[in-house]
Amino acid sequence: MTKPSSAGARQKSFLKGLPFLSPAAGQPTGLTSRQRETLTRIALRIRLPARKMIYRAGSEAGFVFAVAEGVVKGYRELPSGKRVVCAFLFPRDLFGLSENGVYVNCAQSITDVTLHRLPLPELAHVLRHDGDLQFHFLSKITHELRQAQRQSILMGRRDAPGRLAMFLAMMLDRAESDDRHSPVVDLPMTKSDIAGFLGLSLAGVTRAFAELERDELVSFDDAHQARILDVPGFSRLVAAL
Amino acid sequence: MTKPSSAGARQKSFLKGLPFLSPAAGQPTGLTSRQRETLTRIALRIRLPARKMIYRAGSEAGFVFAVAEGVVKGYRELPSGKRVVCAFLFPRDLFGLSENGVYVNCAQSITDVTLHRLPLPELAHVLRHDGDLQFHFLSKITHELRQAQRQSILMGRRDAPGRLAMFLAMMLDRAESDDRHSPVVDLPMTKSDIAGFLGLSLAGVTRAFAELERDELVSFDDAHQARILDVPGFSRLVAAL
DNA sequence: CGCCATGTTGACTTTTCTCAATACGTGTGG
DNA sequence: CCACACGTATTGAGAAAAGTCAACATGGCG
Image 1: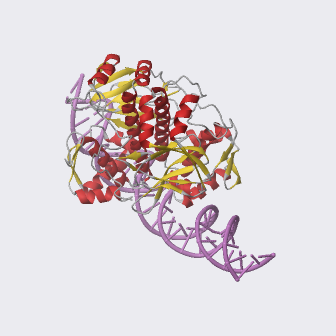
Image 2: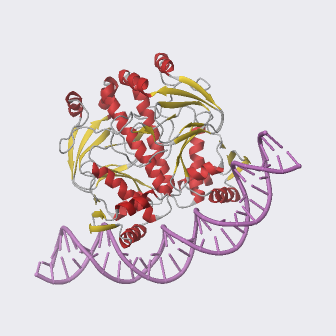
Image 3: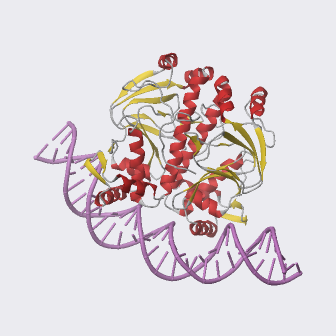
């Protein structure tokens, strides 16, 4: 009925995305120090270089992961050989979704990353016995569900520039956790990854970027950093479903 | 690494979709009778006729709902006036996703429905204090997340017949909860709804249905019931990503 | 009996995809 | 220091697919 886009961050909601574990720079996490300690006890801190496989779809799912630092991509190999990128994971995001005991997709680091690795049985045990802690997880997963729904809407768009604009807006939202209202978007992933994420061809992504630049909505400082030039025009395109 | 599609229903997984509340026909729910009682105490049972609005996007989110009987659609009105259907909800499904205290989409009954309406504050309280019960919710939401990701993959397909086939396969999975291995798919929703769900035009859905029928993969007993004729061929199309 | 929502069909337009050739750029090895 | 090679990105031309628009059919319900 009112504005559909992201309002401020009123904290009043049930099922609201909440931070998780200790972030890289030590912002408040919403967890009590006791809960953080509980998780830290069962978690293993892991550092990985860029482009390292974390797990493969179909392999036994023994852990849930939380990104502490860096960026991870979750993707799926389709029978045709195509790669669909399901999600980009940033600090504080959870990943490691499983079904029937096996991971449903692959995970690979994009940048150097630091992860928290939580063994599933222990995590389940801890969650069952700490309702508040589990509630944070529930909120987090619910937030991911909203994101996933939003992406379905994105994928419903037929026009490549619009999809790309929505993607940039998404990335901006993420980044704003750290740095509010900056018109600069970091894009640590490759354009092929973006193409896989948006369901476009690499060529399509290139052309869409070119079109956005030609219309002077965004500019590119370099391959991995975009800048929104015309915020109103950009927002109009994002919302022009 | 192995088969990516739905295997049997080994119950070994963490984060596996679980039933919720009392179903129409009284199958086991996975909840203890005590937990069911707890939920029943705070829930209000509501009956609605078909095509009744349940809530609108942007209105204050006071409740979470569980479908007991019938089918519900969750959708969003886009600025352009287009309607995107985010989800079809069947018995045992939860809905009522909110953000910042307001519903993120609209919900409307498709058939006559019976719902459980759970007040958010009471539900949150109950969940925090019953880790096992909350774990069922977590599993359920996680299952919905998997579904949402699957739909993003679906939306990434460019070919209308393929999308439609995946949709039918989805609907078949749902129905199989009740009646295993039947090749008959009930489609209580309109084709416009399907179009909205798949991100296609109504005309596109019509033509895609016609193509599936022409290729003798499926036939239609009537407007709301499809029958898979050529299971292998159909599966091939579904998987032909 | 006729209205209104829903669905069907055809002609034409728009858009992206595909394929392929070409460029960029970073790290390696000569 | 340069050259090459590989992953990545750009650009062009042509083909394929769905969208749009509009006319028409169907079907349930008052």
